[in-house]
Image (cartoon, rainbow, N blue to C red; front, side):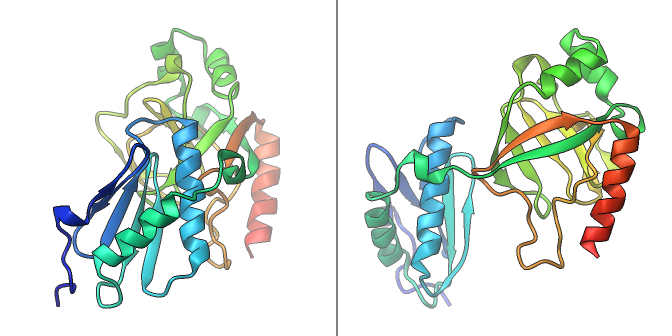
Length: 247
C-alpha cells in the first residue's frame, strides 16, 4: 500500500545548513553537507542521537553516514511530509559539536606477515619501509564515520594521504575477522570473516561485533580509534582473553 502522501519535491525541506530529501516511500535523508570533515560529521552524529532520543513510534532505523542521516519509517504510521516537518524542526535545535563526541578506543594490531599480507605493497606505494608505514598508520587518531557493508564494520578516517592506496583490483573471497585494511583515505576493521577488497596491513585480536550481547557493536559513529602496534605474543594472549570474554 502506498503512503498517504508519497514523497514529492514539495516534501523537500532545505536551509543553509541541511536538506531533507525523500528516499523511496519509507525513508528520508537529512544532508548536512557535501564533504567529509569532522564538523559536518559531528552534526550528523548529534542529530542522529537526537532523533533516537525522541522515541517516535514507527521509525525502523536511524542511520548516520559521513554527511547525512537516513531515517527509515513505517509508511503506514507516517507520511513523509509530516515526518519531514518534524525533522526540519528538530534540525534547527541540533546540539553543538561538543555534545556529539564519542569514546576513544585503543585498538591493538599485529602488522604485516600473514596478519597483514598487503603491508609491503602499501609501504612500496607510499615510498616507505614497512616499519615506517606502520608508524605513519598509527600516528593519527581516526574518527568512526559510519558502520556498514557488514555488521559493525567501521569506516575510519582519514588515513594520511601518503598511505591512501586504492582497493585491490581483485577482492579476496575471504578476509579474516579482525583484519585492518586501507582503501584510499579510509581505514577499516573487518569484524567478521567476509569477502573484501581492502589492502590488508594487520589484524586485531579485539572483537568488534559481539552478536550475543545486547549492544553488539564495540565502535559507534562519532567514536575515535587509536591503533597500537603489538607483537605476536601479545596478539596470542589478547586472542585468548577475547575468546574467553565472548563466551
